[in-house]
Length: 115
Image (cartoon, rainbow, N blue to C red; front, side):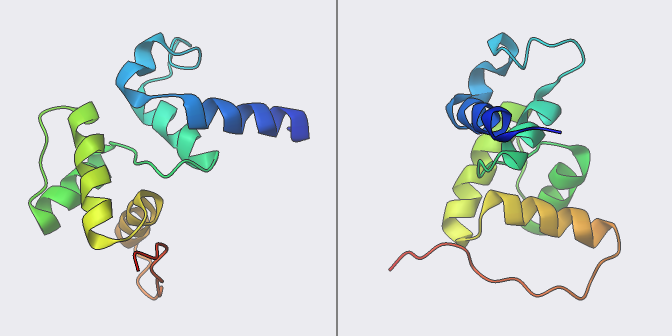
């Protein structure tokens, strides 16, 4: 179990890490940690970002016509999409994951105030 010092260190890492250079990051260099895991860890530590997994990518292409040649470009496009629709990237990812898992009776609130 993580104590508060470890949680703080994880949050600090997540907020300072950059997905553009994930391969050279201290966590990204760990064997078996790919960009999807890297981004998922950042999300779990409170960073509003997205995970470029096949479910998210397929759904964004199908429902919104959003397509990217690579995962890094996809993350950038989701950032832009998130700003346009005013929903957090985390909420977008979880909504897609839950929909694909068959959960359909959820209500969502906007998380940003752009007044």
